[in-house]
Length: 496
Ligand code: BES
Ligand code: ZN
Ligand code: ZN
Image (cartoon, rainbow, N blue to C red):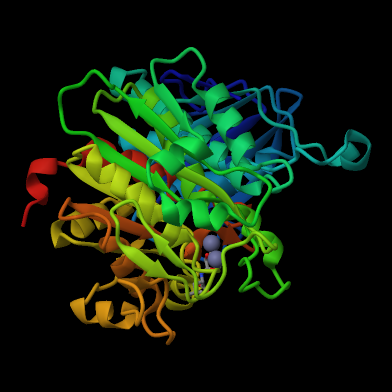
C-alpha cells in the first residue's frame, strides 16, 4: 500500500473508490462543493435514511459514472467520541477495502482536519487490515487471500506537515504490526534465541547498538532471579540490549520489556484452558523492540536503551520450585511462593541493570498480572509509578494514542504483603489482594529512586474480536504509547 497526497477535488476524481470523511451530516452538503450531476446523487444519499451515522460508522453506495462503477464510502468520524475516532473508523474502512483490489482510493475530508488526523488515518489503515497469515498455506487460504488498494490518495494540501503526518502514521502502524507479529508467533518458533535473531535482523545496517548477554554473562552479572526462571527450559535465557543514539551525552530513557516466550506457570503450572495464549507473554518485549524500531525510523535523537530479558517458564526436574530462595542482582533475596509469578523476577534483575545505566527515567512494560484484566477489562493498561507526575504525563497522551491507561496506587502498606519469613521478599502475596499493584511494589524494590513507570499490559495483550483498528488476536499494544511518550516526555518536569 502506497500513500500519496495532493489537493484534488471530488469533481475531478477518476478513482473507482472514493472515501468521504465527515463529522456532521448537517454540514456535509455544504462541505461537498462541486457542480456535477453527482450533486443530486450525493444529496439523495445524504437526505436518505440509509446514511444513519448513529448506527454505523460507514455507509457504502455505488453509481455508474462515465460507464464505470464508482463506490463511495461515507465515513462518519467524531474525533472526541470513542469508537468514532479517526484511527478507529479508518481501521474499519481498511477491512472493507481488503475485499477489493482498487488501484487507487481517494480520501476526501469534508470536515476540518489537522496533520494529527492524517497520521491517525494512516495508522488506522495500516492497523485495521493486519492479519497474521504466516502459518496459512496458500491452498488452504485460497480465495480468502486479502487484497489491498495499491495507492491511497489523500486529497489534501501537500504541505510539509501533512506529508510528515502520513509518514509518521505509516511508521507507527508498521511498528505496532511488528509487535503483533512477534506476539502472535507460536513459541515453538519464537524461543528466546529466535527473538534475538529477529532483533538483529530488524536493526541490521542501522546505527542502533546491539548487545546480547548470554547465560554465562548473566551468571557473571549475578542475575539470580532471571536465571532461576529459565532453569526449567532447554531453551537458554538471554538479556538483549539495544542502544539508540549511544553517543548522546544526555541521560537515557531505559525501556524494559518482559520477554517470557512461553509461560506455562512452571511447577505452579497453569490450567490448560487458554494456556496457549501464554505464547504472548513476551508482549512487553515485543512492544519495546517495536517501539525502538519506530523511534529509529522516526529519526528520534534522544538516547534510549531497551532491555529485554528473554526466558521460557517451564516445569521440569531442573525447574525452580516454590520454597526456593533466589538472590537478585542487587543482593536482595526472594522466596519463591509461586513459580507463575515469574515476570517480576526477570524484570527485577533487568531493573537493577537499568539503574546502573544512570537513566533519567525507567519504563517497564509487561503482561504481568491476570489481576489487571480483572480490574480494567480489555480497555486500559494499568500503570504505577514512584512519581505521580510520571503517571499523569503518560496518561495525558492517551487521547493521541487511543491506548487508555489507568493509574493504580502503590501504597507503602502493600510491601507488608510481600514480607517473607526466610528472605527479604516473597515473589507474590499469599492473598490475592491488589494483585497488579503488589506486583508493582515488588518491582519498585529494584529501581532505587530513579523516576519509574510500570505498565501492566496483561489487560490489552489479546482481543477476542476485531473492531476499528483493533484486530482479533495479539494486540501489539503499548508500542505506540511508548513511542509517543519517549518523544514527548520532559524529563525535567518529572521531579515532584
Ligand atoms: N503472564 C502471567 C499474567 C497474565 C495473565 C498475562 C493473563 C496475560 C493474561 C503472569 O506471569 C502470571 O501468571 N501471573 C500470576 C501471578 C500470581 C501467581 C501472583 C497471575 O496473574 O495469576
Ligand atoms: Zn506466570
Ligand atoms: Zn507471565
